[in-house]
Length: 121
Image 1 (cartoon, rainbow, N blue to C red):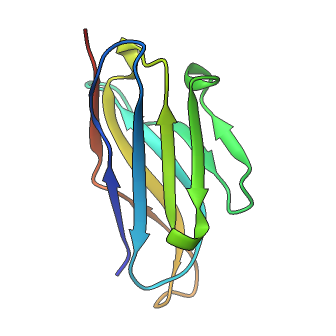
Image 2: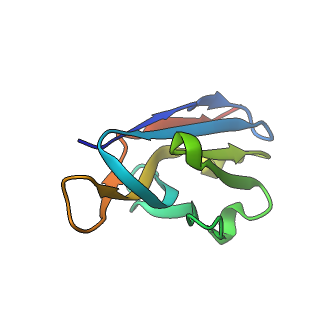
């Protein structure tokens, strides 16, 4: 069974930095696109950034120039470096990955449980 486990959330001051990590494990054949989404209280879950297996990246306009997504394919891990944090970055951040499981003929979407990021002075 495939699992995504996030780490690195917490409390930061405005202008500060945090780094999120998400490791995929289990019966993995291949990991395709990996990404981060976030959901603030009372709002829908939205894309923050994603990275393809060929390391093409996409960012939400609200985080461009401040956040950087990267991945280590050998470790099936995706990272999100968050700099110049703002109050509005406060949310639960979810890891997402499109993974081919050894037991399935086609890839599927997998989600982590989420990690809280709070930006507060």
